[in-house]
Image 1 (cartoon, rainbow, N blue to C red):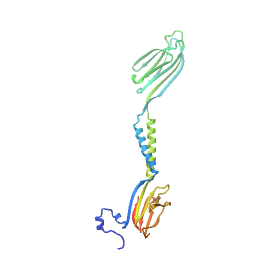
Image 2 (spheres, helix red, strand yellow):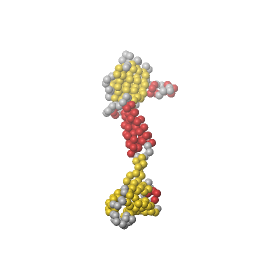
Image 3 (spheres, one colour):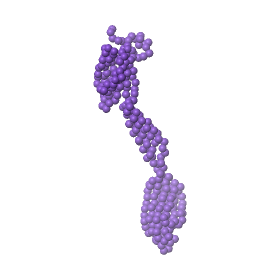
Image 4 (cartoon, helix red, strand yellow):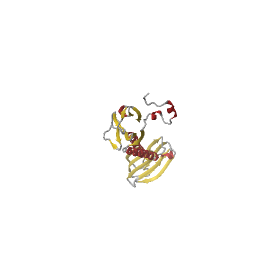
Length: 278
């Protein structure tokens, strides 16, 4: 009958839990979560990561044209002759054909025309340097035959260096992806850093003595830092310990890890469980 067991009637009438009824008279037990000083660095990283991900998501892809295919040739085009080259394009949407030619001999001129799936497009007589751009979306799927014609000349050969290239539109998401990747890394490190630096603080008052226990995460295992009546102990507690507390030092406080790597602790006073962490 000497055990401190509350009556069922008192438990039913109380607003608090039965566990709190076990705390002896003259003892106060409070527990709260706090972030260690180093945790604010991780918190800033977490917030910055979220901002970067949001900013990256708001960026529109950069539209640019890249070379999808090209064709180059140099030759002599004799007087009275023409030369041609054909492209067969099955996907001309958002693409264009660029023609660049250097022409020497005579006046450095040529007649240029292109047979497209929609008909012939005549660019007339062009002089060196020759530059033509064709919007392939405008003329559709099919064959594009490019003619360089020197048939108007009766005596002069033309020496031609020709560069043709098909460009296609692409969406460049390099900047968008970079911001989101960096933001993801910062969020990952920040999130787990905040979890690592989250700590529990228990404030225990026993007959006028105030014992503050801070439960912190360590490199290999968790530990406890003690502050008694405003004086912080240098030693980090990593295993079970007992102290005499109270005005007459007639009570025994025990702090004991109960889970692997000290992930959980129990606190007893005179052998009676009064609280635990977490």
